[in-house]
Length: 274
Image (tube, rainbow, N blue to C red; front, side, top):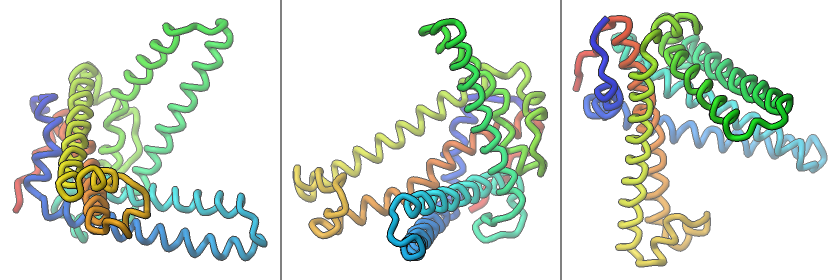
């Protein structure tokens, strides 16, 4: 086991972007292609389903939403697994460390189990609140505390799914024993850094829009689709930033968890590469 620093782990995402910025930029390109693919498939399915259903809107919208949601889930799993693979198994072959295989399916399994667990916990809390006649703020605070505690104890299930090729929440529970507070500090600092990054990006975009077109440009940067016709430059700039920002945020949120896993298991740090 190597020493664990919550602050160093929270900053690991920025260190990874600095070391492998070309890969992160490539992930932005993959994100763009995935977004276009989701849009095209959703449009085709809408036309086909509309023709089959005789123009009924509700089934078409439901089907399109479900398929789009699954495609987005797989895209996020591919990006997230790419971060894990880059940090844990950088020597493995693969284009930009991305692929669609068992690692991604295990990762989706971890996410679905986690979402189900959160739902069950909320459902049990609602039943308990009804049985106690409400419970008020104290019951809500207790539920939040239990959710946070379980979240920290099962935090390493995702990197375990990729590094050890298995879904093992018990393994995460064992690795995080006695490390709740350091992990909570790491997650809190990571969330603050992600929020700060988003605020900085927002302010930079707002400043560029204001300089380009005054108040009209500022409103146009965050307007609707009609902005593409009125101010195409600002629209494309905002769209490009969003495409790049998504993998950046994934790195900032995922790399700290990998750093914690490495520290708790004694895994060597990934060697810096250009």
